[in-house]
Length: 90
Picture 1 (cartoon, rainbow, N blue to C red):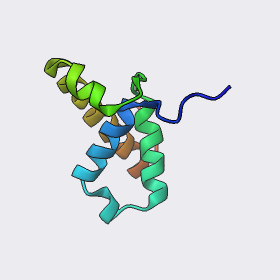
Picture 2 (spheres, one colour):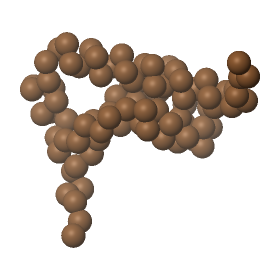
Picture 3 (cartoon, rainbow, N blue to C red):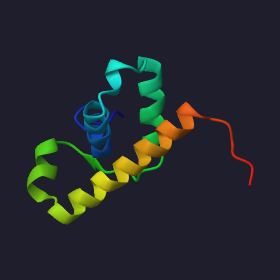
């Protein structure tokens, strides 16, 4: 059995939007961006959809803003880890 090719995690779309907004493709490698996506997505709950338009029409603005805030935090944490992976001793 195979899931439909259209099924995807909506957070993937939001993560990619954030990466584009930060223009990371201009100065980070594709490996860095792939690692960043994995690390950020692992911090977020999955939100599976078939069509992006479903989220545009049926997602309340407050929930959309909450999701975007979670993405900003997840990407920031992932970048911090990738840019300085040494654990900080407390």
